Length: 330
View 1 (cartoon, rainbow, N blue to C red):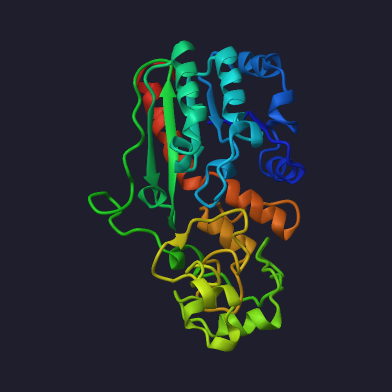
View 2: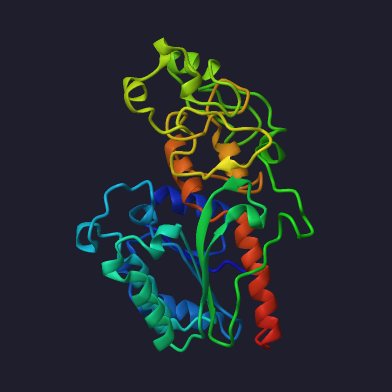
């Protein structure tokens, strides 16, 4: 597959994309401000080759970590999946793929966003879509995270790809943190490796250094002596995974946009006194080592946390290619 086009309004995401896919067209605008004809012309230029659209609307409004459930009128990110539908209806790509958090199926049900999107696909001539919430580890991604996947074709029914990893597959062992970051060289908190791009870690305060030193692999703040504990942890116990290091022999927690922050989830390195580096976060999202990121530490982490894991993307791509071959379009 040739990557031909991308749209995002984040300037650092644009720079990262262009570093890695210099031949592709990039529009750095709010999707609501982009006219259908612009994408339509690009799609027509690609014909007669099959065209696939991949859409991932901002997932934060649908995330279980978003404890406030606003109406769509209160959070302008809610209807952006319908902006994606606008381009599908005009351009009629052969395949449409959507990735999001599982909460898109049940958060704010009165808005019926997903139902409206599905109805739009039907009216645009697509077959019945396949969609489900699936564990990333089924596709060789070393994370204990589920994602909502939707796949639909104009030509015939297409299922989601079968799982590639786990019991009953050719890869019965699930991928672990150690499989993906165990060979990266040691660095300290706040340090950047001299030769490995993006192998740089956020700094830690002296107090958080003491906290991470007091936490065993796979442990958490419940293991700290009382003088290191936060008042909220003394009162309510708090979230068990925050301030926690990963375990070598397990999948990582689901990576978020703050995946290099020690205090935001189980993002501590399993044995080094720091949070995981940008490069380690990218590895756990299954990016190749030569993929480059532009921007600050926090910006790079945001791009990595927002990304579709590369192994999942590859699995979807191979599955789509087989489908298009079977229906005679490639």
